[in-house]
Structure formats: structure tokens, C-alpha cells
Length: 412
Image (cartoon, rainbow, N blue to C red; front, side, top):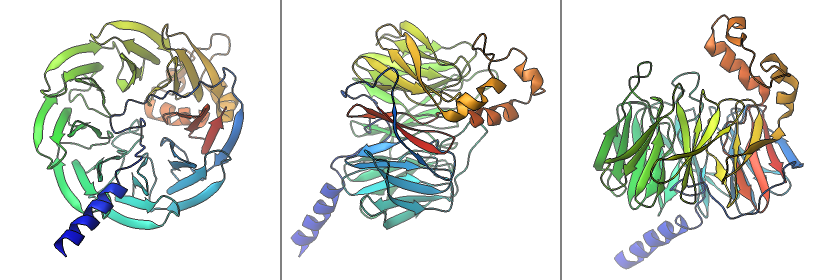
């Protein structure tokens, strides 16, 4: 009888250990694929309208494309046709990206519930309740996007905890308390969970029990003294890379947390890291660009992005793809950094004239004066351009993304 119980447990674990897909394609968040590139002037193969802004990122698993919306729903679409296969309504905006294994999808909602749904039917399997989920400030668009690895699903929470749950049942295995909201997606590699917090600390935890392996305190900056860590980290070889609101990119040794190098981006938060072979790519906030570094922290190139970037750069062997707050999708040469805008949302075409000078392509120099120095109102209005805040997903020569215009797009 004891043997039978053990076999059942192992069967459940194996069910939830195969074919995991998540933000950045894997639990290590490298965000790289060998698929062929899309054209410089791609066609819209299909578009699907949700009932609210889409800031979460698409995840493709087989025929399914999963994506959340501020209309409180998680959608499963046919990736080839855009047809809705099912949707599940929660009690709050779904501004997190799913993690999915061979049977289920896992995600956080602003209703303070973490959900597990059957991948094929959308049927509720289980929920886990946190103390509460909400944005910290007007530029905090995302809740923590889960990671699933070896039958365990990990997520951060606004309540300051990092949670480890059994993927098959939702049973709490462990939790770790940080000093601030954890909206970064956990990164999992070599039995280590890596995640930063709005307390300005970057944590490395043992995945089996949540024990602290090491932690690193960001430097902080005059206007952002905590050095909040808003987005996920990425791992390559023995190094872990992450960004902070203190304008820095940090490279640490994975096993010890000791510093390897730091890069300071003058006047701007650094946003989200990603990998392209041995090259580290980083998107930025106020400097509106992407940066490329070699393994030693040497800056190789800078690539303009029209407006702020809040997503990771999806890469193939030759090109990187990223969206911007201005509703444009950029394709950049990974060797040179040369980039071009290859797609613009309809909302961006209609409204960017409110913000950008058509003669120069730059933001109006007196834009802040027009808004009477109300940054919050200005950034809220930027979303009217159909901002692309989600990380693009590339699959079989197609590119998928979401937009604040409420659409999910498939480009080819």
C-alpha cells in the first residue's frame, strides 16, 4: 500500500514536470529560441480582442496560446487561428504571465488568488490565496509571473512572500518573507530560486526548502534609495544578471552572490535582462533603448526603442524583438544593434501625434509642460497608444504579443 502511494505521488510529479513553458520560455528566463525570424514588414495573421488591456505576455504550448487580460480573464487561444478555445474569469486583473506544464497553467490574479487550471478545458484545479495583490505605483504594471520546475510552482506576491506550491495540488511547501512586494518572476536554475523584491534586496533561495543561500543589497540611488528590483533575473553559465530602479545592471556569481560587475545607466531605470548566446541584452526605461553587454560587462551597442521598454527582448540566432510603451515593435540586429520598427498598433498610429513630433520622431520637447509636470497623467495617457508591454513570443516563424489596446496579435 505504501509503495502504491509512492508511485501515485511520483506519477503526479512526473505529470507536472514535462514540457514546461513560461515567461522567457524557461524557468531560467533566457528568452531565446532557434525559430526562423519574421519579416521586416510582417502581416497580421490574426488578432483577438479581449475586454481589457493586455500587459501580460503570451505563452505558447503546443496548439495553445495562453494570455491574461485586465478584464480579469485568462484566455486559451488556438495559436494558428486565434480562435478562443476557452476562457476563465477571475475576480481581478490578470497582469501576470502563465507558467504551464504538460497538464495545467498557473498564474496570479489581482483578486489575491493564484490559480491552477486544466490546460485543455480551463477547468479550475485549485487555488492558493495570498494576503493581497496590487500595483505599487503607476509604473508597476505586472504581478509576479510563475515558474514551474520539477513538479513545483513558484511565485512572488505583493504580500512580500515568495511561495513554493505543489503543482498537482496547490499544497504550500514553503514560503519566504522579503521586506517588500515581489512582482519579479522567480528564476529557477541549479536548485536555486532567484528573485528581487521592492525592498531592494535580491534573494537566492534553496528550491527544496526556501532556505536563504545568499542575498544582495542594491546600491540605491538618490531618488530611489531602496534600489527596487521590479523584474526577473536571467542566468547564463555561473552568472546571474538583474536590473534595478537605482539605474544599475548587476552581474553576480550564481553560487555566492558576490559581485562580478555593475553597469550604471545615467538617468534611467534598467528594466529587463535577457540572453542572446553569450551576449546580455537589457531594456531600459527613461533612456528608451536596449543595451548589449559581453560576459565581462563591456557595453557593445545601444539600440533606440522610441519610448520606455518594460519587457524582455525575445531573441533568435540573429535578431532580437521588443515592444515599447509607444505601441511599436522593434527588430534589432544582435551583432550591430541596428534596429527598425516593424509593427505599430492601430491605436499608436491614431494617437502618437499627441505625444510625438512627426517631423523629428521625438517626443514634443514641451510635453511635460503640456501636462503641467504631471508624470502620472502623462504615462497613463501613453497607454492610449496601444503600448506593447508584454514580452513577444516567437514560434515557428510567428510572433505573438499583447497590447494595452486589448488585442492579442499574431504576426508572420
